Length: 78
Image 1 (cartoon, helix red, strand yellow):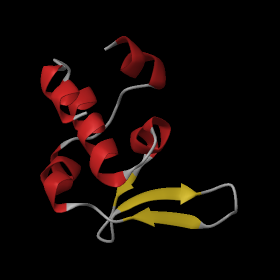
Image 2 (cartoon, helix red, strand yellow; image 1 turned 45 degrees about the vertical axis):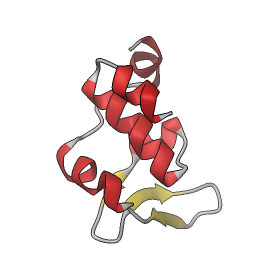
Image 3 (tube, one colour; image 1 turned 60 degrees about the vertical axis):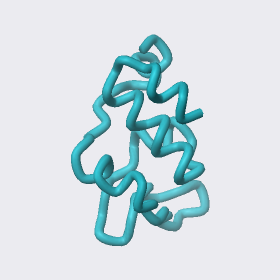
Image 4 (cartoon, helix red, strand yellow; image 1 turned 180 degrees about the vertical axis):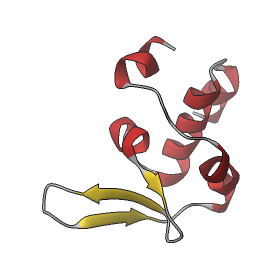
């Protein structure tokens, strides 16, 4: 999976693939997640609770630098 990320030319898609690898988050979760001090915040989930996913040290720099602005369709086309 990390080889796929290296081969990808689009910066946000590369960051999303690495984030998925280290966090087990789904594509939609990654694109809507907000970075907080505790980790990635997914807001309210279907059970009505906020979900926080810890940020792995390997993607901590990405979490601070990359803001995902892609839509799911743009992600698929990249």
